[in-house]
Image 1 (spheres, rainbow, N blue to C red):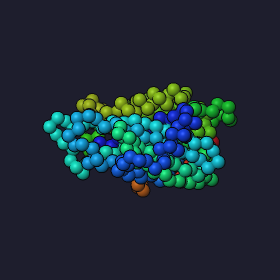
Image 2: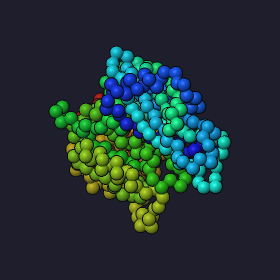
Image 3: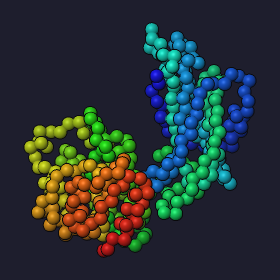
Image 4: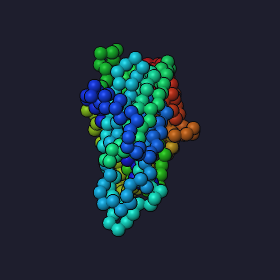
Length: 369
């Protein structure tokens, strides 16, 4: 049995000189009995933001603590990440595990689990992790990892650079480049539909948002119209003809507020998916027509329905189109948005990995004007 997983973002420690001495000290052999725990590193993974993520998981058997203890147990975590040829970066976090409710006991095989992570640029890194409880018992682990620079993907972090998860922020469109406008229509739906799903998961929202910003940055667009539609409830949840960093925050909040658990009677009585797509594209037709490229971004399974004469007419009038079908596993890009793009002689691309996204962006930049 496991206690609830404590997955927390670590905080950057601003005084590296002081914590460096402390880390050297805590990694020395201790006279006290060590804490029984396991620290398992996670292999680096490239995200759809084109930033490498790595991290670790900690498991602490609860049988080391008095089962009838009425006090909570406090823990501190410290992480040192030292790039080869660079300065170390330190992260820290504190968390607590409450006692079992009065008259109850944690089963002896229960484990306290904690996970964390960080973002890294290409390079070689030595990492040390340290966990201690409020009795001074501790466990430690050191490991190294290497992240290769992929010539096919322009990663967003410089070599040997370390940041906290979420520490990076989208800087917005670069208007100093040659003018190039895009219209992005997002199908705000989960990548994999699940029963009893009420909201878009943080994973689904993250994939949609980081894919969007990677498209804007790596295709070097200077202006963007962004439209996000909840195709299940037949409504536009976000639209902006001049997308910006502030707009990204509004888009994130709009995605988080989508209710997948309830479909209103009005929606069921109203237009079907194809008719809703017709009305949405007609409403935003003028802004979309000004774009150099149109991108449809959403799950491979989403937006059901068949093509209509009006949709075929609209498709032929649109700028070059590129449809990206996001999926967790290989699957045919077979949905209404893919059919719409094909009707306008656009490209369709199944995106399962960040490498797929990079290839799609490369093709996107080569579409004729």
